Length: 107
Image (cartoon, rainbow, N blue to C red; front, side, top):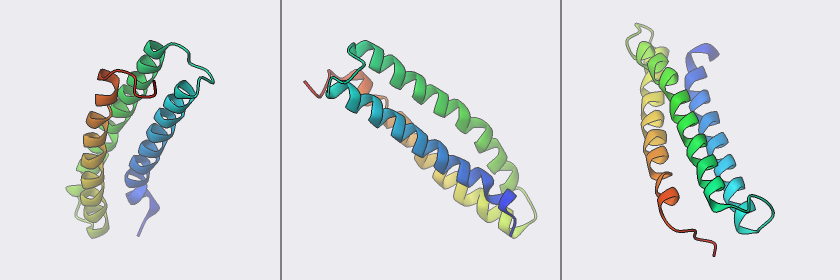
């Protein structure tokens, strides 16, 4: 089993972790009035983070598609698991847009 085969799956997890950490940090700094005083700036930062994560997910999804078409059993399994994880991450990214559209929750 090659680590290179599973790299896109690990990349999806790393991308998700980065997005969650950045979004939670920005929201908590705003709600505790530590910094980011303007709610519009926070929304713009969160939207930019979400768009960047979605853009980074596209080449990963393409790499996983190639692995699913491979003759290697490990590559096909990595492609399948990565596709499922990528789909869940894409649904999460869509869901993360909702807080940008509602009034500020911490006030």
